[in-house]
Image 1 (cartoon, rainbow, N blue to C red):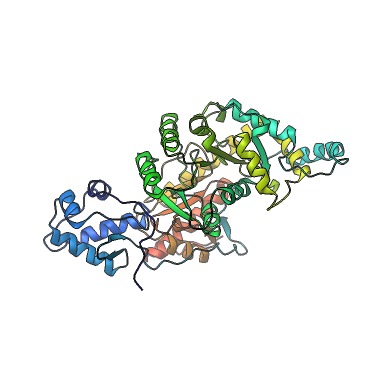
Image 2: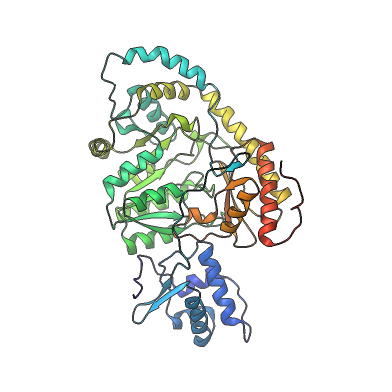
Length: 481
């Protein structure tokens, strides 16, 4: 059966030349070197599946190479499954040996779970539960169905947005069963089978799974994980024009998994691009309160301050307070929120009242959140030091917030390392989990939500697993505690 060109943008010869950088051109190895350079960009997620490649003549001119060399390189890429072609349709990036990535196997006894970027319950949770138990009596006389959420909780959430530079009222907030539940509600309302959803590459895996479950098509725009470029605003603009997605899903505050944060000037440009295309955007702010270098209220204004009513913000208490509360929220225009409330009846009838009372109490304790950020700052620095000590050839940009390091390895072995790590007593999510179509094999996410001594042991085990993947026995004799 002839291959079908997936939805994707086109990369120009000039832009591909910049992406490839310097690659060797020997008399016999030029084609192999060029093919290897393109393969690496595919594995790193910089050339997503479906990206249409420039014509041979255009690419030859951009690279200063012969068309013979370009043709030979493309032949190699086709043989290896990285490129597919059809007469009259050109060539595009394919997915070699693609297989669906399911959830990771549960950690075994004695294994360290390095897959979840989340913390135990914030101190003070038990006290908040005691207070909520008393205050629950005020609500026992009504029916208990709160499709928008308790007014007191919505007022506190709205106040936080206002303090961050986005005037908000309680009427613009709806409480949900976590940020992921909020995203699924919006997804169900805005997109259907076959619709495209613009996402970052890499991005949050569960959002990708939700998009696929809705039979929608994620359209990736690559981030620069080094932080040198960060968000490719021009790439977003091109994807909006070429793919015409129904909406965009973006994480601009301590992006999961890279930890990047878009500055105010970038948000203004991104908001202008979205407004020009009239494309709604779901802004995942799950990690915005975990600013480890400053006060979250003094950070860049929310993207919604620049995108206006096109922006739908989703947030959560899972990362800041406790995942066991299973509470999040949506902040949107009153008109759109009314439509979401109507759509919600097909899914559920509101969030639990008792947990909402508990969260209302927790949000009143700013000092507890300050202590959580201070604790996580120490965890982050300890994990960074452990990686430098045990895996000195891994590199990363120290994030200013969030919950994870996005580490670049010297070899594209992320999936193999994840398998090997399990046998060394540590569960870790490979980079491919964060890519729309896999790839990202030089990258791996390490959360800093574990105490320093435990994260140090996890990294030591990862070092042993990495040595086994490379086939070098050094450090393999070290005992596993």
